Amino acid sequence: MENCTVMDWRTAMNRTSAWRWLLLVSLLLPVFTPHAAAGSTVQYELRFEKPNTHLLAVTIAVKDLSGATLDLAIPAWAPGAYRIMDYAKNVQAFGASSADGKPLAWHKTDKQTWRVELGGAREATIHYKVFGNTLSDTAIQYNEQHAHISGPALWMYVVNGKQLSARLTIQVPSGWRAATGMERTGENTFTSPDYDTFADAPLEIGDFAEKTFTALGSVYHVIVHDQMSGTDFFKFAEDTRKIVETLVPLFPAASPQRTAPYSEYWFLFHIAPVSLGGLEHLNSTQINFSTDWSSTGPGQFGGGGARYGNDYTLKLFVTAHEFFHAWNVKRLRPKPLGPFDYTREVHTPRTASGVSGFHRTAHHGL
Image 1 (cartoon, one colour):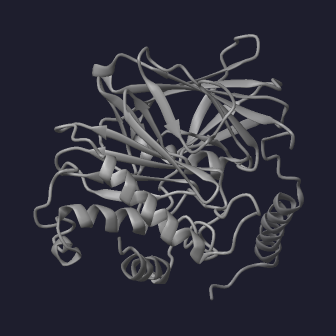
Image 2: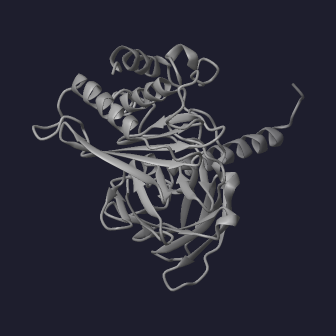
């Protein structure tokens, strides 16, 4: 150690003490995290730009704010996919204003978080656009034919406010309809109790085909967006009903009126070339197939589909798997799978998916 004078030693101690006091004060001072009142509802509105732009326009209105700033973030991943998707890269034209229309300054604190300077405002309106032209169970596709939306890819959330309820209004293009597992409150208005439930529900918006059936007290919607031959899916809908009637009784009844823990369930299917995959949700699933309903050739699924029979039985196999996840993983789940941390990847064991694989194989016989 180098020699130092008494004054050097005292100066060093004073500097060290100053840094320690600064650290202590920073820890003790109240943290002013922006938030809305507990009873507030976050209002979302969805509009569509021209289809050839593949742009969806979102407006978010937040009231009863406190604090100097408001943070909003878009997820980095989608529950069920377990990989970083970097949805922020598709966001553009972000802006914010107060209730009287005055623009509010903002800046990004990281690649997926936007901080709005409230300047005393107690209400804020956020608007942004998202580009999407990928048909995937974790992405967005918007074109002349339809709009398919994976919630985490589109909806920002109020940081420290994911517990707030959400209300959605969709400006649906003429001739299109909206299908989703969200609770419907009007023709094109929906509500969710919190952000996790809101983002969990995918949407199919377009001129889709639909068949419905009732089983064990719940209504099931089979929604099909078919970019190929448009083959009738009556038989598949009937076989899906058999899957439901086989799997639902494996779990305790939710109520005397219905066995399942939901009143409605939505199967959202896409038939499109080079499109495979499926993702589970609380009362819906979104599944993509690359062959039409009439196909009975060798099953194609990740190179190993042939072991599940032909292409038709493979479709039933995948449907049973994703449907079973409505219990296993979505309701009976590892602790990291809800409430979710959308800022980083979540590591979970593969046991849950394996259990679904066992049951779909053991019980899907039709």
